[in-house]
Image (cartoon, rainbow, N blue to C red):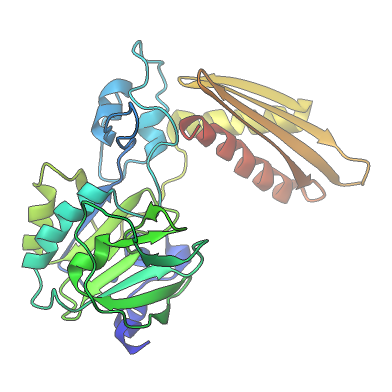
Amino acid sequence: MAAADWVRERLGAPRDNVVTTIVPAGFEAYARILHPVQTPSFAATLVRWGEVSTWSGVTMNPLVQWHDIALPFVRPVAEPPWRGQGPSEGGLFGPDAQALIEHLAQATGTADTCFLCFWAGYGGGVAYADHPSPMPGPSQRRDEPALALMPFREYVLYERPLLDATAFEIGGNHPQTPNLWWPADRSWCVASEIDCQSTYLGGSQALIDEVLTDDRIESLAAAPDDPVYVPFDGWLADLVERVIDEVITSGEASVELALGTVEFRWRPARRRGWGHLTTRSSRSHGLSSGVTPVDARDPVEFRRQVRFYVEGAVLSLVRI
């Protein structure tokens, strides 16, 4: 669709793994909004990245990853301040979105005409919320959505006022903010990539400064060439390599980390060159396990596959 062409033209290639892979290049400044670690529900309280950083003793920095602060080298004395899945992916926390919209509205002259894009792959589809909500209600416009193609995603695009950004849900009952949204005057753009635990914003320096100093939103300054995902490094990278070596040479490995234990077992299958890697991650309040077929015919590819599943099993400690 023509309305989205400028976004597609200013997005980098997916392999670049930088901020402008997700949000268009060319803005004066950028910010990264961190999705809450835990949101209020039942007896749960709101937990932010900063609280987890304090618990683990790992200092926050502009490139910080969730696993950096949630998997410290030294086991903290106190219990973790969060339970469950950790930061959600692909959308803003409702109150964060409402606070952000206040700033966005002041930074555009076309708040009544914005383009709201939702990933086309959401199960159950995207629709206006039918139930009462404390969030701003939708306008009366009901134009049929269009499709917008980006370098590696297909989106359903709605033309709506800015306030409608918090009036959608997926699957019939789950509030969902747009994955990609901007005003008609293109003064800013917000992007919540579906696999990302942060939302990125591009806009004027004044807008970014306002967001960064708003205590209601946990955010960090970002640069257009900052990597979006930083793989394991330091002691955690060394640990993964040791586990891979043990799995390949002896068929088994086990590691104890600050949050729990991860076990691995490799068993060749009857079919030559193939086998199964079993992973088991356990915390005090949860368990995650899996059995995955692995191709062992090429040593380099075999090691790559084992690394992928070892890292995934370690990460599962902060997601169960």
